Image (cartoon, rainbow over all chains, first blue to last red; front, side, top):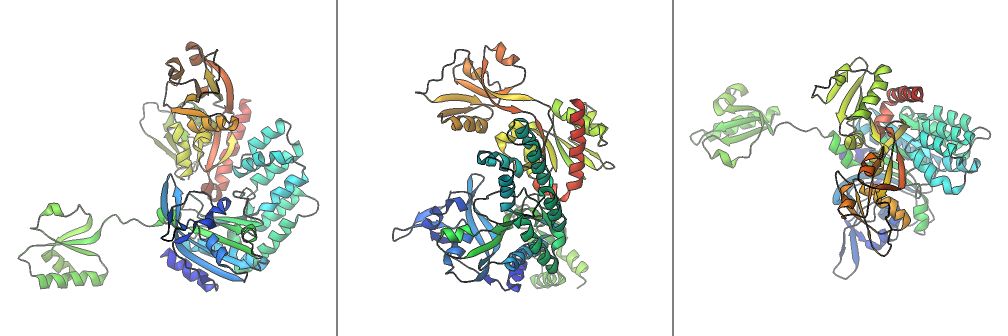
Length: 359
Length: 210
C-alpha cells in the first residue's frame, strides 16, 4: 500500500521506474566498499565462473548504468544486507536524480523526500544540513585536522559536554567551543535556522548557508518548508556525501526512515562526469512499526456439520463476503486438532449466521 | 508524555531526585515495597520505567523510552544509536585493566582478558595492536586471574576495595565513566522542547551539586 503510494508519487514528478536483476557483478561492490555500510555480501559463482552478488544497494547499479545523460529514476526493490549478524532481505524505495544537478533539482528531490514522508504519516520532520558547513567552521577556527574525528563524533551524538572537555584539555579555544556547542544545539525550522547559524558564525555568510537559503525558497514554493528543519549534527557517512544532506523521521517510528543527499563523488569515482542526488526510504523500518496488526484471523467463523446444506452455506458465506466481512468456515464434527488455533471476532453456527445475515 | 528509562538502583534514584525537584515527581517510585515497573504522572507529563542498567540504551534506541540515564560504559559497550545529551557527572567510576601487581605482559603469547565488556576491551587492545583472547563473564570477574583463567580483567573500578581484597591492582585506566542523559534520535525531533526542558533541569541539578 505504501509501496504503491510512493511509486505513484515518484512517477507523478516524472521519475522513471528503474528495475534490475537481483544479481550484480561482485566487482561493482568490491570497488566501492566505502559506499556500502557493510562489506558483507551474499556472493556466489555464476556458471561461467564469474563472481556475482545479491545486490546490497541500488544506487550503485543506477549510477553504473548511467551513460552521462540527465536522468531521474526511482526504485522500489529488495536489497540483501547483513543486519544484526544475519543476512536479510530488506525492502527499499528511493529516488535518484543524475546528470546536471542544479539548485532546483536539489530542492525538488528534497521536496519529494518530504512528500514521501507525508505518505507514511502526517507528523514528519526532514532535517537538512550541508556537510561542508562544519568543515568550513573547523577550518575557519583553525582546528588541527587530528581533532576532526573526535569533534565529528561529539557533534553526531549532540554531545556538548565532550566539546567542553576538549576545551578544558586546551585542545580548542573557549570561543570555538562556544560556537560548536551552539551549532550542535541548533535545531530550528530551516529559514530560522539559517539566520541563527549566520549569526553564530558571523562575518561574511558562508557559501553553504547561502545555498541552503536558495533551497529554502524553492521548498517554500513546493509547500513543504514547514516540515524542514536545520540540524548540523547530521554528518554520518560524510565520506561519500558532499553538500546537501537530509534525514527524515515520522513521529510514530523510532528510527530514521529516510536518508539522502548529494553524492557527486560516487559517479566521479566510477569515471562519470555527472552529479547526483537522491534518497532512500527504509521500507522495513516503516512496515515493522506501522503495519496494523490484526488481532484475529477472520471476522466470523461459521461452523457446520456433514448434514448441513452446503448450497445454503455457500449463500451465507457469499452474503458475508459481500458485506465486507471476512468469513471462514469449519466442520464442527471434523477433527478439531487438525485446525490451528485461530482467533475470530465471532463464532456462529450456520443457522445463527443465516439469521444475522438476514437471508 | 515523555517516557524516561531509569536504571534500577542508586543511580536511578539519584537522577529521579533531581527530576522530582524540578517538577517531574512521581512519588510512587519511592515505595520500595512496590513491584511496579512503570510509574506515571500525567499532570507533569512523565512516565518512568525502572529497567536493568544495561538495558537502558535498548529502550531508548527502540523509542520505547524517549530519554534515559545510562553509564558511559554501557554506551561504549553496546553503542546504541542515540544522542548523548548530557554528562551528569554522577555515578563516576573508571573502566580499568587490572591484574596482579607482578603482571608482565608477554607479547609472545595471546593475552587472556576476562570482562563483562568485550567490546570496550577489544577496542582498547586493538588500538595497541595487541592480540587478545576475550573471556566474556557476567560477574565475579576478579575470580578469573585468581584461578589463572585470565591474565588480566577489564572491569569497572569504583573504590578499588574488591580488587584490593583479591590482591589485584589497577594496571591502566581505559576510560573514565559517568552517567549520561541519552535520547532517542526521532523522539528528540518530535519532543524537542520537553526533552530540552528536562535536560536543563538536570543541568541545574548537576551544577547545584558541584
